[in-house]
Each structure stands twice: as C-alpha cells, then as structure tokens.
Image (cartoon, rainbow, N blue to C red; front, side, top):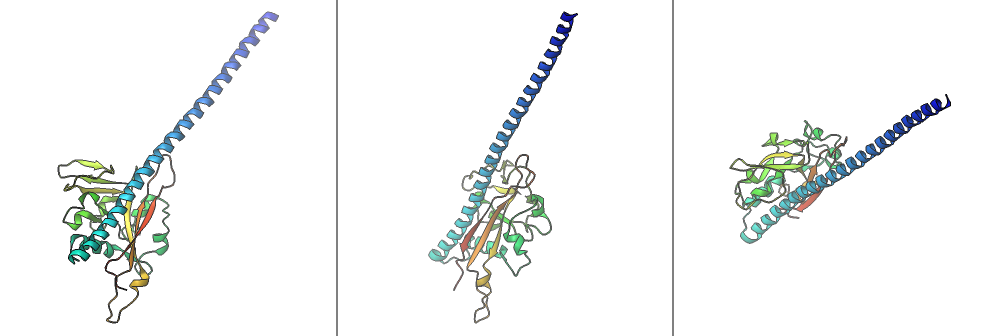
Amino acid sequence: MINKLKCKLKRGDTLIEVTIAIGIFSMIAIMAVLVVNTSISGTQAALENTVTREEINTQAEALRFIQAAYVADKNENNEESSKYGKLWQEMVSLARELGKDEVDDANFLNYRPATCSDLYGENGIKRQGAFILNVRALDSDDVDDILVSIEKKPDIFQATTSYPRIIYKYGDGTVDYGEVLYSPAGSDAAIDGVEGIYIVAARDKNSTNIISDDGVKPASAFIDFYIRTCWYTMNAQRPSTISTVVRLYNPDYQN
C-alpha cells in the first residue's frame, strides 16, 4: 500500500515538474520573441530614418542649387528669365506670407500632425502650397518637369504606408520606387508619386510689408523652405516626423 502511494506521488511530482518546465520554456520563448521583435523594429526604424533624411537632404541641396544657379545667371549673363530664374520665381510665388495669407500660423510653424492623413485634408498641404523638386530632371528645360506642385498635380501627393519617398517613372515605363540615387544627366525621369514628403515655403513678412515711394512692394528679403515628412514606423501608433527648414536669401531683394 505504501509503495503504491509513493508511486502515485512520484507520478504527480513528474507532472508538476513537466508543467513548470513547459511554463518556464514558454516564458523564455516569449521573451526571446519580444527581444527579436524589438531589435527588428529598431533596425527598421533606423533604416527608415536614414532613408528619410537622405530624401530631405536631397531636396535641400536642390533648393540651394536652384538659388545659386539663378544668382550665377544674374551676375554673369544678366539672365533673370533663365530656367533657374523661372524656377526661383515659381518657388517664391508658392510661398505664403505668414499672418496675411489664409494660413494658420500655429499649424504651419508647429509641425505636429496627429495623423499623417490629416495633412492631406481640406486644410492641409494643398492650402499651404506644397511642392516637391524632381532632382533627376534638373537638366530639363521645362520648369514643370522640375517643380511639381500640388496645385497642378494634386493626385500624386499621398500619405505613405511605408516610409517617405518619391516614386519616379521613366519614358520606357520602368518605375523607381524611391531609391535615393541620382539618375544620369539627360534622363527622362518624371515624378509619379510623392508619399509622405513635401515642401512648403513662407516669405519674410517684415520686408514684404514695406511699401516703397512708388507704391511697389519689394521682394521678400528671404524665403524659408520647410521640408517635411510623415510616416508610421513598425508597430507605431503615432506618426514619425522629421523636418527641417532651409532659409534662402532672395537675389531680387533690394534694401
């Protein structure tokens, strides 16, 4: 009788030990999965941040190049109507004068979108005159090939489901989904989509408020170009945003 009782206790102890072992193994497995998932999420977020910053830097360099090329044309050839002059004037015309135009100053300057989709609503980037620069067509003679505004092509500006990118389409039908590489000079790349990245500009209101003796309002002393992005990283509930501002002084300004 005693031997039978000992046998039953041993069997019960074995079941308890196995159950505990399974529980411990499950906890370790879950912790390992969580660690791997966190590591993958961190790596993915770092990669997306790097690509986004490259896109922003590319747009910033294009803005500086256009201004510098316009200044060179004016100084060397006195060509105010050159391609880069037209590009500069087009960018200036899209700039909003804060405090005077129909722009909510707080929303324009304090870039904190609750959701990325909010930016593309009625009071979003269209109202602010958003545009993007086609860095792969800077050698084109057509200004519309280089500067793509939301006013002319509203359908290509969209919120992104991955990371901020510009989608290019070539004449042979091939599509480039956002790799940040320059194409060869003379390429026929056209912007086919702008996802989660855009530029808006603001004029210097202090200089534009001055009226000269002949009643003509002078050009703004400088233009601030805000390059903005919005997207969702892996498992994120709130949007990720990276933005910068490029201040360029106006070659047409006369103090």
